[in-house]
Amino acid sequence: MPPRPTRPPRPPRSIAVLAYDGVRLLDVTAPLEVFATAAALGAAYEVTLCSPDGAEVTASTGTRLTPDAACADLPAPHTLIVPGAPDLPRRPPPESLLTAATALARRADRVASVCTGAFVLARAGLLDGRRATTHWRHAATLARTHPRITVQPDSIHVQDGRVLTSAGVSAGIDLGLAMVEADAGPDLAREVARDLVVFLQRPGGQSQFSVPARTPRPRHDVLRTVLDAIHSDPAADHSGPALAARAGVSVRHLTRLFAAQVGETPAAYVEAVRCEAAQMLLVSGETVTAAAQRSGLGSDESLRRAFLRRLGVTPSAYRARFGTTRAPGSEGRP
Image (cartoon, rainbow, N blue to C red; front, side, top):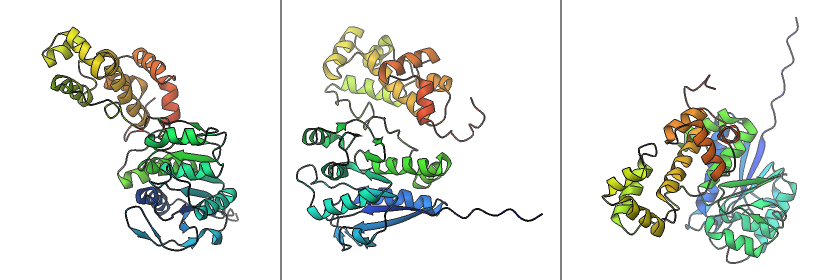
């Protein structure tokens, strides 16, 4: 019996990362690391660092980067990644950068920005009529200066058609992992994340900040102690009486402190922390029941109500959308 013909290997996807003077270094290196690691693990990627004219560029840190090519010399890339720079929200991008990014974007199958790189895509008209995000500090500026863009200020990354945008700095890793997962599947994306020792992967719709990070630091030591206890163990007993006893104050006084310094009730804050913990458990591959129990929300129904109230989706839908990988040893779980 004659041997079956073997399939020719797929041509590698070309990834072009556009560097320029003043670029934020981590915005460049984060996606470079993700795609280079994916290639080392067997993915068909060919990664190129380019600059508008092929000349050496100096990052915002003072680090000099030597590109592989000028933008004009590159064949049409599969993916163009435009990193950000601290000055982009305050002044228009240099004409050479805008011209190079626009020309490459027209020929690319997929275009992505990291952090304030969204301002380059916006100036090129690539985000008009699309949803997009950028660093939380500059989201209002992007929305004001480019009103045709629907800015989602709290998202880690956003995809609208062939264009992807991401939040600040380290979100370039999340964006890269999302693209690797789309190209090569969740197993390889997980391996890349493990190699880089990062969490796989913060869902695009997840807030740029955790509940503790977006909560103003309380003025009173009593309240700080209570919040730290909630954050460190969301599943513990955080009923009103238990929290008040821990703080050494009455339930009424604790409620007043929460209202004045946190802006919500103790119960609402506890639910927010537990809901976020459940999100992470679902993303890591836990079942809905396990996520409800381990987060402290208790039952599937309590988890469902909390998710619908805070996220507008059910836990099962959230897990189906973002839980693309399972925790080690979880094979066979429902």
